[in-house]
Length: 118
Image 1 (cartoon, one colour):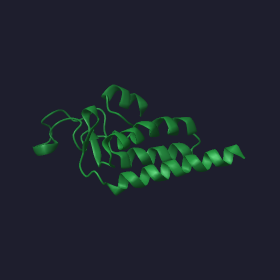
Image 2: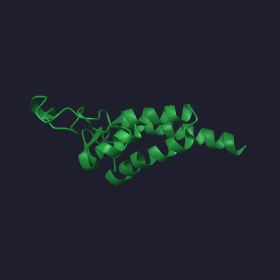
Image 3: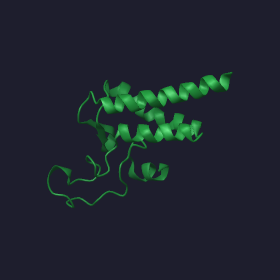
């Protein structure tokens, strides 16, 4: 998963698909690589993977992979639906699915931290 992110140049583990389908494989607006479901980066997807990292005791990895997602929410002042190449926000800027999964991932990490500190 991390290697696909590195090779693709996409910003997070929300990357849906790597390698992408080649340009022109699809007709219409999804024809280009790293656009929408053809390799786009979706926080609602990546956030769920972070939750599973926490549940499976990969706490440092979860924390590390949450960072880029939180950074872009702050930078773009919104919970965008998905991101294209160069971390370009796309779709709704008030996507509740992104907000929800990030909130849950943060809550899981905070719960682990509280239990560990005891």
